[in-house]
Length: 312
Image (cartoon, rainbow, N blue to C red):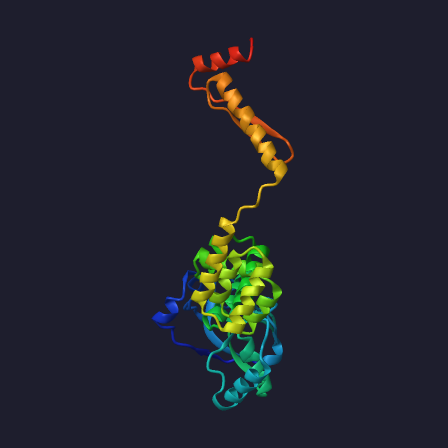
């Protein structure tokens, strides 16, 4: 079979150049001559589009999107039957007649539903990390991912490639605080994860809940969000009030604690009188502690040592 027919695309406009540092380094269009395009180079990204048989393309093992709605896939398939593929997918070549999808899984699945035997695709050279980053960035920019899918993708990039949060932010064009906020969502109860995936609550609704340590209280507020259709501002207010209440709460002293504290205070005052300086006694619940006797000078230290009958 002859090589796939290649069609040159125009360079992207200024909008594509402003998508973030990570995307710029991963997906920037590079002019490549026919001779250079045949060379193996891990940093080279082809700007040409090829028609590739859909059966030659394997799924992306790093696909950040976890769920695809069948109804929407069928709607996209109907559109493809009429208009064709407007935006090519992106793949990397593994070997002859074998490619691996980087981004565009919905378009690939819908094309198969529409009965297409071939699909236009960018063929790019990418390692596993670049592949995962490209898939994540494209989905984020298309707003195809929910907050939990984004959080899991960030977590996977950090875990598998040893990236720090700041490094990851640079790679995907996000601030470190944004990356942190997404990762913190993974600490929330499973019920809230499901609600975010199903668009019952937004990322902005869920973010304040992370500041509450008690999962039962998190779920209680979540139930109120659903039942009362609370605004983000109202959720933030509820969380703020809960934190203030917790700060104001002081556990009642036990009778034995009161007596013990009284005795400690009494000994502390007696020692302060004896040494002529402020003495502090610190004690734990287990009865362990320390006595601190401060001094202001060498002479003052020698004075205290004499009172302790200390000799060198």
